[in-house]
Image (cartoon, rainbow, N blue to C red):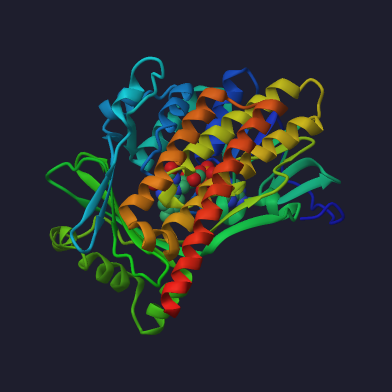
Length: 441
Ligand SMILES: Cc1cc2nc3c(=O)[nH]c(=O)nc-3n(C[C@H](O)[C@H](O)[C@H](O)COP(=O)(O)OP(=O)(O)OC[C@H]3O[C@@H](n4cnc5c(N)ncnc54)[C@H](O)[C@@H]3O)c2cc1C
C-alpha cells in the first residue's frame, strides 16, 4: 500500500463526497453526521466485522453524543437496547467493595451535568445505527479495503477486491487491529501498558442487576487483572476477563484452553457460580490489544477516528465516547474545510493534539493509578479508584462543555490534562520509591 506500487485495474469505480473506512461506531457516527449535512457518503465495512462488537459500559459523556446522532437514552432503554448505569462498583475477592457514583448536586444549578448514563447492547445499538444510516444519504458497501492509493500525503482512493472508491475526503474508522491509515503512513505510536487479552461472553439473568461491576483480586506485587459484569439488557449480562498477554500465554502453556482459563477466573468469585451453571449464551470471544495512540492522525484530506486513532483501555469506559466524539469532530472539520479542499495545518494539529492528549490522560492514569501496584498498594484499591475516577469523569465533562476546537481551547484542554498527568506521575514515583524502601527494610 504505497504510492509507488502499481494499482491493478479496478472492476468498478465509485465517486462520492466522503469515503468512510470501516462501519463500526466511529465510522457510522461520522457517516451519519456527514450525511445529515447533505454530503454523499460511502461507508465500507466487511460482511464479517473484524472483531465482535464490544464496549458496553458507557461513560457519562457518551449519551449526549448518541443523542446528537438521534439516539436519546430513553429510546435505547425503551427498545431494550440499553440499561441504566447509575454507578460503578468494584468488588474485591476479600469481600470488600467500593462504589463510584457522581455527586448528586452536580446535576443541579449551576452545573446541570447529566448524571445518568447507559450500558448498551452493542449488537442492538449497531442495528439502530444501521437503520439510521440506511435512512440517510449513506451507501454502506459490504467489502474489505485492501489497498490505499495515495499521492504523497493525499489519499486518492481506497480499493476493495471488487472496486475502487474515490472521493476528495476520507475518514479512517477501521478500528484497532486494522488501523488502515496509521499503517499506511507509518505514523508514530505512543504505547501504554503491556499487551492485553480480553475474553468475554454473555449469560442470561433472571434478576436485573444495577450498574457496572468490576471484580478484582489485587496482588501487592503484580499487575492487575480484572473481570467485568455489565447488564446489556434486562435479561442478559456481559462478562469479560482482561489480563496481560504474558499471563495468558503462561496459562496457555500449562495446557489450558482459553475457555478453561475464563471459567477458572470466574470461579474465583461466588457471584459467577449460578451463571456458570446456567451456561453462557455464546462461546467466548477473544481479542488482544495494546493501548496506544498515533501521532498525526489528520492529513490534507483525511482524518482518523475511534480505535484506529487511539485505543483506550476498556477499564476507562471511554472508548465509545472517544469513537463518537472523534467521528463527530472529524466530520465537522470536513464540513468546515471542504470547499477549500484541504485541511489547514492548524486544524490538523489541533485535532491530532486532542486525540493524543485524551488518550495519554486516560491510559497513563489507569496504568499508573490502578493497574500497577505502587499507588493502589499505598492507598488501597478503593481510594485509588476515586483518585482515578474523579478527574477522569470531570475532564470528560469539561471536554463536553468546552467543545475544544481552535488553538486556544485545545491548548487549554492540553494544559489541564497535562497538569493531571504530571500530578499522577509525581504521585506514582513517590509511591514507587516508598514501596522500594519498604521492601528493602
Ligand atoms: C475488550 C474490550 C472491552 C471494551 N469495553 C468498553 C467499555 O466498556 N466501554 C467503552 O466505552 N469502550 C469499551 N471498549 C472500547 C470500544 O469497544 C471501542 O472504543 C469502540 O467500539 C471503537 O469503535 P471504532 O468504531 O473505533 O472501532 P470498531 O468498533 O473496531 O470498528 C472498526 C470497524 O472497521 C471495520 N474494518 C476493519 N478493517 C477493515 C477494512 N480493511 N475494510 C473495511 N472495514 C474494516 C471493522 O469490521 C469494524 O466494524 C472496549 C474495547 C475492548 C477491546
